[in-house]
Image 1 (cartoon, rainbow, N blue to C red):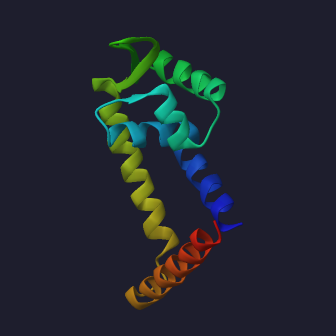
Image 2 (image 1 turned 90 degrees about the horizontal axis):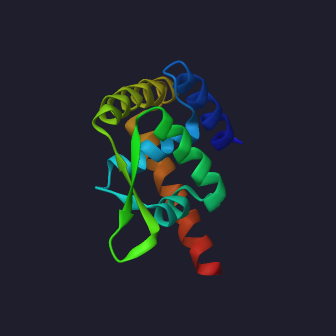
Length: 130
């Protein structure tokens, strides 16, 4: 429930900057990599390839990404941020930071450490089940 609420809040903030949550997530991922193939990006975003293609089409129309052929594999495409995208990414990072501050404003450092510990234990237990 908290994850859904966070996505909804970020989506509202992102729309104020001409962006959607899925597009912002793609830009964040691409900003941390020189480039990614469509397959890598779809896996990282946990979406199907046809959904990613529509997402990339939208980002391309906004002038934020380009597709480039992967040498040696004519079917694969690298997705690369354009220069214009870097300003959008910086703005989205500022939006995310403001949202983080507002969400965590009443938490102490101890609260955050305790919460992270709990999440790590839960993740460890979930991984042990597989």
